Image 1: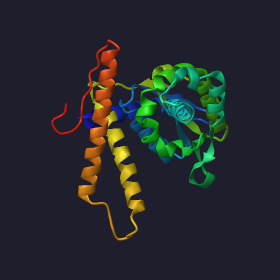
Image 2: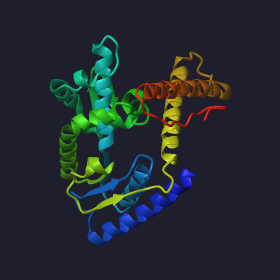
Image 3: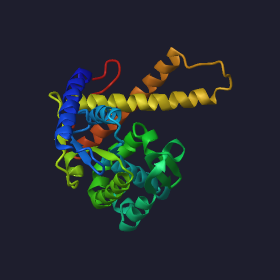
Amino acid sequence: QQQQQQQQTTTMAANNITNANANANATKEGSVIVLCGLSGTGKGTTVTKLRETMERNGQKVVTWSNGNIFRSVTLLAATWCERNLDKQEFDADKALSKANLQDYMTMLSFGKFANHGTVFDTRIRGLGLELLVSEVQTTDLKSPKVSKNIPTVAEFTQGEVVLFAAQAMELLTKDGWVVLLEGREQTVNYVPTPHRFTLVLSDDTLIGKRRAAQRLMGAAVKELSSTENDNDNDNDTITDSQVEIVLDDLLTKMNDEIDEEQEKQKNAGSGVFCFKWGSGKK
């Protein structure tokens, strides 16, 4: 159902944006095109369609998302807590001090790091991490320790992320690229461009289901890949039963996280509704 809605939304959006850009001649060197909307509304898919269309027309196009930068800073802050605090729980006051924020931003850099130094990417290097955002954006950057703390971190780091994004886009446009910028409206309002579009879904309950499925599949691929690498027999492959066992285990963990969050909300005096995955659990 969401795929059908998203396909309709993204196709219509891509066509409208492409026509608008053609009429406004917006895709010259240095142009920035902004797509807004909640997670799951099809921003990434629309960006992909736009990129494919523009590249077929011979244009150099690159995508940008502030959300991944906020998530990268959150991952660094959560990792700092794990390494420096006894309880290893997220402590915003300590993790997000002025000095720590400055350190986190020095651990992020943007440049031609991917594909042997030929493709632009954001690199996370510090606190024992050595990651490229394009490789962990659906796994590490959407883990529970990131997702549940990103609102707090975003509140503290708006200025730092805006500056990082501005510098990255300047680097890109100087290199002759058209920048497709996507994110939530409040995080991309700083971009001075007339080419701004907002995507929505008619059924917003699909967004949470999509996020759960995305987390589940990303974690399953990571765990199964690790299992395959640890196997000494080159002829062995992952079986259906192994996949089922991993999925069942991950579903159990996900539902346990929901139970813990519900209990925290209950103790805090507020209610929370969660859709639980797995056999007999809703």
